[in-house]
Amino acid sequence: MQNKKKILHIILRSSYDGASVLPVRVIRHLPEYDHKIVSIFKGALFEETEEEINYDHLIESSEIDKYSKTKILSFLIFLLKNKFDIIHYHCGGVSLLFLSLLFRKNAKIIHHIHSGVISGDNNAKDISVFHKLLYKILDKKTIKIACAEHVYDFYRKNINSGDEIFLVKNAVEKINELNKKQVYGIGYLGRITKEKGINIVFDLINNKKKLPSRLNYYLKGDVNLAVAEFDRFRNSYNNYYSEPSLDVDDFFSKVDILLFPSIASEALPLVVLEAVSHNVAVVLVKDKWSVEIFGESYPFYINETNKVNSIIEMINKYYQSRELRDGIISLYRQINDKYNFQKMIESLIKIYNENSASK
Image 1 (cartoon, rainbow, N blue to C red):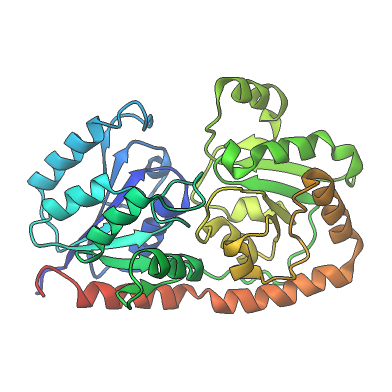
Image 2 (cartoon, rainbow, N blue to C red; image 1 turned 90 degrees about the vertical axis):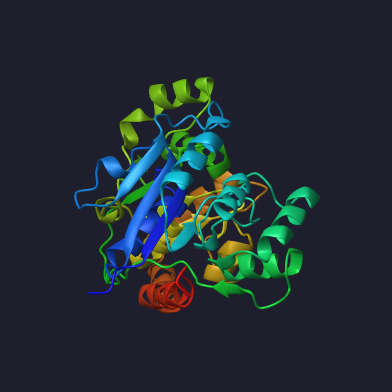
C-alpha cells in the first residue's frame, strides 16, 4: 500500500478565523492525505473537535505579541524534528514562511493567501515596499494560492504578473435553506474586535428602540478587546454573547440578518459565505471583497457617513419588504453556485498531487 503524502498545515493561532477553520474543513474532505495542523499559539478551536485531527500547538499561550520572538525558535525546533511532503502555509507574515523554506527538507511550500494585502495585517490597506521585496524573493520558491479574485489581482499587480499563482476561491458547504422562515433575529459572528466593526454593532444594540421590538440579538466569537472596551462589553452586551464554535448552524438558525461591518483588509470571509449559504442577509461595508461577492448594487451596503442609522434603515426595510427579501434569495442562489465547495476541494487535490517532495 502506497504511503499517504504528509501535509503540514501551519496556522498562527487556533482561533475561529477563516485561515484556521479552512484547513479543518479541507482535512475532513481529503482523507487520502496524512494531515497535521500546527498552530504556533494555543487557541480554543480544537478543544471542541470531536473527531481525531492530528493537531499540535507550539506555545502554551494565545498572546501573540508577548511571545513574538519565542515563536521563531519554537517553530524552528519543530521543523528540524519533522519531515513533510507539503507544507501548506495559512499564516500572514513572512518570518515563519522564510523558516519553512530554509528548513523544509525538500517539502514543497504552498503559500495560501488569506489576507487582502498578502502580509496578513488586517489594518493595512496596501503592502509596504519592504514586504513587497520580501514576497518577490519568496515568490520563486513557493506555490501560491489566492482565495479571492481581488487577492489574485493584487498579488499579480504587486509581486508577480505571471501565472505562477492559483486562484482557488474560498467556499463553504452548501446549506439548502432558501425557504428559511423569519425568526426575527440579527447577529454578529466573528472576532469581537474593533477592526471588525464591533463598536458599530454595540451602537446598533444601543439604538434597538428604533428597530422591531420583537428582534433578538446574538453575538458569537473570540473576544479580543482592550481593557476598557472589554469592560463595556462585559457590562452591557454579555447577555447577547455565546462562545465561538465550529458548528455555526445553530447561530444562523436564530438570525435573519448577519451584521458584518468589518473595516479590515478582508480577502473572502467564510462567515459571509456561511450566511449566504444559510439564506441570511448580510449587512456589510462596500469594499473590493464584498463587491466581488455581491456586486455593485447590493441593497445592504452600509452608508459610510451614517453607519448606524443606515443599518437601522436597512433592517427595517428587510422586515417590511417581501420583494426585497425575495431579491436577496435570488441573488444568493447565484452566489452559492459561484463559490462551490467541491470545486475548491478538487482544485486543492490537483495542487497537492502535482506538487510534493517526491516530484
